[in-house]
Image (cartoon, rainbow over all chains, first blue to last red; front, top):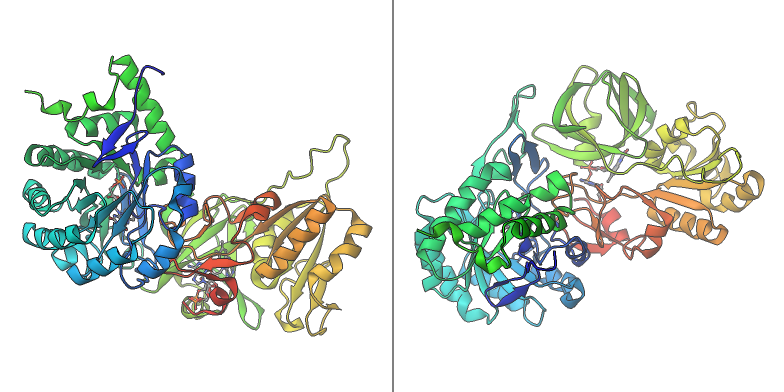
Length: 307
Length: 270
Ligand SMILES: Cc1cc2nc3c(=O)[nH]c(=O)nc-3n(C[C@H](O)[C@H](O)[C@H](O)COP(=O)(O)OP(=O)(O)OC[C@H]3O[C@@H](n4cnc5c(N)ncnc54)[C@H](O)[C@@H]3O)c2cc1C
Ligand SMILES: Cc1cc2nc3c(=O)[nH]c(=O)nc-3n(C[C@H](O)[C@H](O)[C@H](O)COP(=O)(O)O)c2cc1C
């Protein structure tokens, strides 16, 4: 496979391969980030941190179904102060680490950013798109072009790190939100967060399975939607895209790159295939590229847009 | 494995001790000793419990009264329904030590403390040759005394068996029984001592740990111990892994992911 170069670049950050651990899956400790890096990820994202600790929703917080997963973790996290202790000396992880941050409004975001100061993050991802946490993301209306512009403009002034903005698929014209982020100074777009919210009911219990009743849909069911979102965003903005949603195989990753992504996030596939999924996706991508005479990831980015 | 909760009827409730009850379900569930299930009471919560009774067409859990959820469960009666998913996690390795060249009989030592006995009970039934030590604060808190008649007992107040903790007995037991492996579950401070003992004598050792578990399927990261997910790579871990695990005996994470000294974790209502 020596002829194939899997490396790529995302907002100026070099990645050995395009697979990135998506936020909220396993990113709770530096130790887990190391485990995922060892499993072959090109970069990793931490579980989103807020200003104050959040307990998250009661269990069940996740449930699998035939086409993926429903989750209402509810942003459980120890807050930025504890988070900063956890994520010191990030060089040990061995691959670039992206900080994911959340807030109830501009004030929160700015303080969380301050808390990241001095840590070795390679980029910051501002998540404006969770569909199941009161006060945050969609439930706080942060997924509109106007709110996106307001938050991103402020955050832009607070950091020199490359800035990614994570969008929700639950908006008909996602390109408009992406453009708002770009105009406000974002360096890249992460697309997408979970879809919905959705619901699953246990018919014997006659109750929604998630304690919060509703949760975000991820995994295979999200893949075609995520692809369309990335395709639309690629048409509207110039900044690079981290494509996320339902990726669990090399072919899916290639497809996402062709839609316009520069790198691909993987979350739910850790549930269906284990941590090894990162190495597996890379291996399959490499094989596909070799078999199809493709030497670098760059050749694939946006390939599906050719007239 | 049940990936989403399946509602099951409580068929029997056993009062094991003043604060501990077992709940029996007449369902068959493929399971290996050491694994755990998630037990759901709709509109209350869902929490992890070891399987403590297991047969072809039944299984059960043994639950100590701790806080809100276990209170809710203890109030439930025969005929009421709860949701079960699982079993999850890595089981005890029953083949441990069997690699010896001659056909010598494999003998194990099982060290249980408090409700940790629940995760060891089916293991004890499956082991052909074992010596079992259970420790508790006081006689009234000892579990399964009729179920495992030859079990050695220790109590901190001396109200039953030897006065002291199970690890006090290990040296003597080893001299007497020369076991090939030690399996343990209980207070982490006890398991730390068991690990030390096993290292000194070069005996294969496994321990079942407790951390705050949420998703149970290895995605949420809540139950991590350093780089391990306890719900997938555990709850049973080998001595070799434990030796290198910085958190073992020292740190655990609260429900919001904050890493605190283990004493704080245990003392905290979550
Ligand atoms: C793999 C595993 C197997 C277990 N097996 C048993 C068993 O067989 N019998 C038994 O009685 N208990 C068992 N437990 C512990 C049991 O899950 C907790 O006692 C129970 O969740 C307490 O809930 P609560 O609401 O009553 O108490 P709370 O007041 O909420 O908490 C009391 C203490 O219980 C622990 N705890 C609370 N929630 C959780 C959680 N989601 N995951 C892990 N620990 C938690 C914490 O230490 C907390 O400090 C096991 C735990 C794990 C991780
Ligand atoms: C259990 C779980 C927790 C998540 N937590 C977060 C989070 O904290 N922050 C965030 O921006 N996205 C979060 N997400 C969304 C994922 O990062 C990702 O965008 C989404 O799941 C789609 O990718 P996938 O299909 O590969 O999982 C979470 C998803 C899941 C399944």
